[in-house]
Image 1 (cartoon, rainbow, N blue to C red):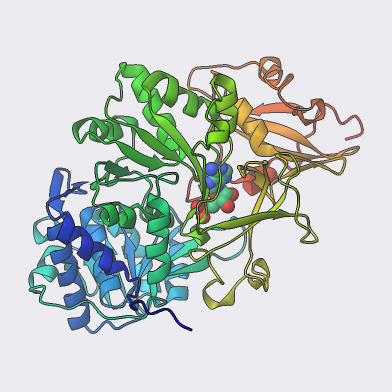
Image 2 (cartoon, rainbow, N blue to C red):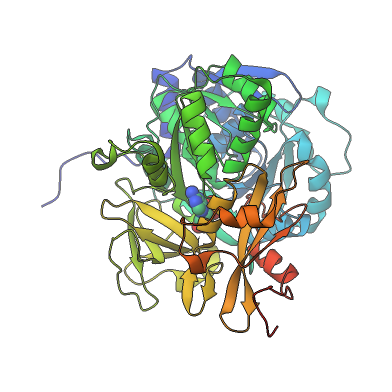
Length: 545
Ligand code: AMP
């Protein structure tokens, strides 16, 4: 017997229809690439998205065509996204922090047909476009007054291009499983892999994200997604904010402490999300200026492990609740969020901070398990760590073109490549990337735990722990530290940080000081590069080296 309920496909443009109907005047504010702060609302944004869809179709783009975007978070970027999806196209976000050759490779792999690009990235596009024969049109997200001359073929100012449409367009009726978006993961090894989101997965992900114990975004929130739309869909906020009708503030390309503070203050932001580096910059700005955060209620921090000091400062000094989160491009991206269950609500001080070091538990719609190398499930005891595997309606079933098929098993589990343990209340903690664990005498040492402790030192800007070869133990931990400007931390002082906090044999054998640590395009430490640079490093503990 079948249920007798309506077939109502989960399509992304329905989110915007809803926002425009129920919350037409709710503002969408952007720091424009041209400079000024500009304001629109959901009703206007929908009208312009319809024009984007109409123009794309008139220009000959078809259902299933990949249409790239290389842009900061802005209302225009959102209009482009919804317009592309609404005519059946597939938005493909490009990360401008990648090298031009990587971007050209990705665009050719996806066979991108058109590109929406911010003024900022025109010089980059001039390098890439000639290498991407599939690219038929480049639409620069500005008006003709700001459009510089360019040697590029098929090159137009967005506002002129849009002005030729009247918006009299009906969204395409699509199967909810149709592709809606694409994003390539910037793996540290091998070619990038394409993740393909569907309309259904995007809508379900947005619904999962807004639940009260997940991101908990409401119509009364003012949301600032600092995390870029090109980094795992701005963690879904370009869909979940309009879904609930929250005011949205888009930061453009300025993510320094002073610029972010300005938006937090003038727009009275209540909810924001970004990687730890952004929050380190903001906290430094607040400490230097003595400013406070009277409007901000909650900040979601993920993308890499949130340092304990960041959580502590936000909560103790500024009264802002921190939600540590973990996810992946392949998971749309939310996987777990560290909101507090009743079992833990009485925790205070250091114990609460210990809990918040964990990446949290899965909301409905994400399943997880931890296994050993033979796929045996490991206990949820908060200690035993192994491979973290996930499945759910907004988790990839395969990569575009079938790459890396070994990461997906027959029961639908996706091997995340992360190493983690889960406690008896379901809280997961990442201890490493499987490629980055330090193997000392056959036992694993969590590099992330060592780094978290190291960045607690007042003179440390950034730290990375890597395994360096050792004749007796195979590998031993080495701590690589970038000191804060003008500071000169002492090695012994730094190593004393670990006393009593980790097992004795986890304490790094040595510390090296460097000016900078290499990062990937999504801000993660490139441990493979560090390991290569330090492969001949001789540890003082290795007598036979
Ligand atoms: P991306 O697809 O660029 O978002 O990268 C996903 C990877 O980032 C995950 O597989 C983790 O290794 C790492 N990651 C994301 N969030 C966290 C977190 N809160 N703590 C530690 N690692 C994280």
